[in-house]
Length: 185
Image (cartoon, rainbow, N blue to C red; front, top):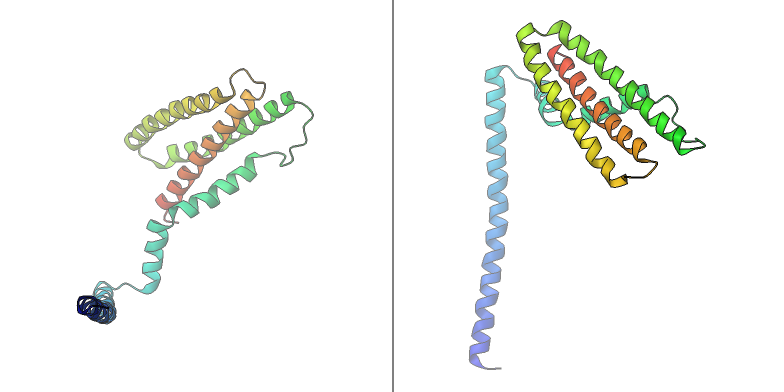
């Protein structure tokens, strides 16, 4: 081994040692910074009169909306599905069942829409209704687009109705969640 190779090895070892010390030191610095942030947060919370329970409530409201919506969607799906079994004899039976499930999901949506009309001021409901009409047009186009994958097939009506049901359940969940937040729940 030449002197140059030994020197390069020594330099690499020194860099590794100092690099490791830097990383270890940065961990300590991160701990100190994290503790400082916690102290500042605690002081801010005391100044504002907030508790940990208040923070949990804020977290629930702002950061867990998707799981909340999923729970609502699951509950609506149970409401609108008359028979969870898929023991139908013909494709026509399956198509009819899918169409009926979509219609029941629309009934659930219409109930939420009626409640919104009751509680929202007229001008706010008018704005909301415009958005709802846009959503309705979008959902029909989306279902038709999905149905094109099965163009000419006997199961196409079932696929389109299933997509409309899925989207309607999703929309109903969003609006139920909106109602809950509007009512302070």
